[in-house]
Structure formats: C-alpha cells, structure tokens
Image (cartoon, one colour):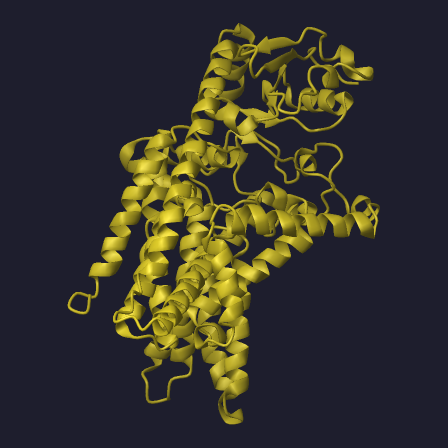
Length: 563
C-alpha cells in the first residue's frame, strides 16, 4: 500500500460494490413504502413529469393535488441518485437500485480514510495503522444496515456518504483556516467552501445534516477560543464564512423551490411530528397533531415516550443490527476516552459528536416518530464512528494481549477478522429477511393490483383522473398503503387517515374517491369502517382481495357521500 496509495481504497470500493450488487439482486420490490416513494419520484423525474409523487401520504402541507409536488418533508437526494441510474438503464426498480448501490459503495473507502486518520492521531505503528484503516473499510463494506439501505434505496445511503465525507473535511477546513497568512488565500478558503457544499448535499439528503453543521461549529468555536486573542476574529471568519457560502449555494435554491411550491421554505410537518401522540397521526386529514393535545398527555407519558424511544433506538438501531460492532465501539470509546483520536477535532470525533446530537434530538424531540425510523435513517455516520472506534479498541486489546504473552508479531488483524466473521453472518441473515419481505410484498401487491384492474370502475376512474392536463384533487383510491399501491397500479392513491368513518367519508368526497383499499395489518377491518353515522357512505359489502392468508379489503364509497 505504501507503493500504491490508491490500492486500498479502490479495492475496498470494489468489495463494497460487489456485496451491494449481490444484495440488490435478491431484493426485487421496494421493501418499505419510503423506498417506493423515492423510486416513484425518480421515475416521474426521468419520464419528464417533474419532481412529483403519484400518492399523497400526508395532508399536512398544501397543495393537496395529484400528482403531488414531492419532498414537503423528505428530501430529494435519494431520488436524484436513482434518477441518474434510471436515465441510463430504464425506469425499473432494479435500475433505480443501481444509483444507491454505486453511491453506497463509497462508504468503504471513506471509512478507511476515517480509520487511517484515527490511527495516525493515536500514533500507531504502520502495521497496526494499516490494519485499523483497512479493517474499518471492510466493516463498512459488509455492515448489514449499510448494505440493505443501499439496495432499497432510501435516504439512509446519501446521508451516510455525505455525512462521513463532511466529517473527513472538517479537520481539513479548520487546518486551512488556521494556516499562516503566507498561505495563498484560495488554499485557506477552498476547503471550507468544499465542506459547505458537502454539508449542503447532506442537507438535501436528510434534515439531520444540521447536526453535522452544529458539530463543525463546536469545533470551530473551540479552535477560535484556543487561538491568540489577536487572531480570533480572523480565524472565526475563515473557519465559518466559506462553509456558509458553500452550503448556501446548494441549500438556498432548494429553500426557494420549497417556498414557490409549498408557500414556505420550512418543512412544517417536522414540527407536527414533535407533537405526535401515536405515529398514525402522520396520516391525519381533519385532526392534525397539536401542541395542546401533546401537552395534554402529561409529563409522565411524555417522558415515558422519550425513554421508550431511547431504548428502541439504542437496541434496534445501534446494538442489534450491527452486533458486535456497536457494542464494542461504545465500550472502546469509554475505555479510550483520553485518546487523541477522540479528544481532538478529528473525523472520528466529528462522527461521534454529530451522531450523539442526532440521537438525542430524535429521541427527545421526536420520541414517537423515531420509532418509525427518524433516527434509523440518520444513524449511518454514527455507526461508521462506532465501527472505527470498535476497530481501534480491538487493536488496543490485541496489542495488550500480545505484550502480555510476548508475541513476536503484532497480529493486528485478529480484531477486525473476528468482527468481520460475525458481521458477515448477520449480513447474510439481514439480506435474506429483507429479500423475503420484498418478495412477499411483491406477490401480494401484484395479486391485489390484478384484482383491482379487473374492476372497470377503478380503471375508468383512474383514466379520467390521470388524463387531466393540470394537477387536480382526484383520486379513485384511498389506501393505508398509498405509496406501494400507486407504484404497482400506476395511478394516484391517497392515504387513509386513522380517523373516524365520518372523516374518511369527507376525504372521499373531497377527492372524488370511489374505493378504499385497506391491508389490515392490525386486524381491525372491515368492522372499523362499518360503524358510525357515515357507515352508509361505505357500503356494507366489503370485498376480500388477494386470498384468505393476508387479506386486503375493498370498500366502495357512495358517490358524493358526506356525513
């Protein structure tokens, strides 16, 4: 590697790419509705329809028209990555996966760079430093959450890549800002501008990029405070202004777009998500979440949600899917808390600080929403930090054992090899589970779509709605899985609110909807929609779709019916 410095990162990229291609080949249908949403928008973009969605999944942000302008809350980078590959390979789901797979493979060389920097900061020998760097890259190449996310695709992968890249650029931007005045102005400003651009790309992936920016701000303030008093103002300007300019070049145009499309540059639904009493309120139509209802729970319930969210995210996001990497990483951080790799403004410390901030905000501010994936999709940079910390910790442990037993060789690969063996087995299991879920949902959705297409009223109404030259409030179908159903049917579908039959009837009248399709995961249908004053709006004949094993129900809606 000393003779060819690019050999290690290129080899790691190739390994990560092969692993992701194999995983993607087994996942043939969007395993989550979020993935279906990103792919649907990418397909519309490639086909010239613009950045729009064929489903309405939330009624929080106008305009409530179909097709719906996309990304009132979520952000576009996952769809842009899929659109890039779909423009070349066609508009199938497998073509959409290629963009995420290629982007996701970069995490291996990025983790290698983080590990190499951390090893240098820890003053490890060349052999041990090489083992830490390559071991970090290999773990990132095969870590289950990273591989599955790249194959879906969704916002996890772009935020992971740009978040880790931003962490690597932070020390370089600070070093450039603190260089002597003899340095050329461009060499002092350019690293900050590049960091700002990468943070902007991270923001266009997920809103949690603000915590990466906050981490850099903390690092910059610490550097300014440690500088001589005569240099503090200049250092602050050089450290912060170029980053702000670089970020604004990408973020401001997006905020302008949001203002023109949605009437506001800020995702208002993110505020509502902090007030959720239960996650089903995300789909509310007439009764949106409110601060009053949130406070009405009482402090005991609110704190209970926070505690439950922390336990959920720690267990199901950090510890179990990454086992044993997450656990070893946490123990290593506690044991090596005085290490220069953790105490200085390094890429590793940036990943850990920003990750902890993301974890705390998700669990304290959005304790209900995070159970459905708020922290899960933003956890990638933290998991990379824990992976590198785990490799460092295992290196220190093996070195201590080697000294105690007077080994003649450092055996620096023992730690990474042991973790890779376990992670590889878990990766296989995770991919098999997600692939089975994907195939099962594909079979079920295809069967339901075939039965719905056999109904002349559905196809005729869909043709009438999609044939309009301008967006309209027309959707034949309402469903509790609108993104999946819109994807397989190729027609607009709107979300079923978890509200009373009266509210559902009002929604159906407002959008000219003729049918409800419910998938019944909670076992509450058809009875839940056949009680109350508006039961006459939903005829008493509930048609069972797609067999008896996992039934879906079709409810005709009386024309123009309102409670």
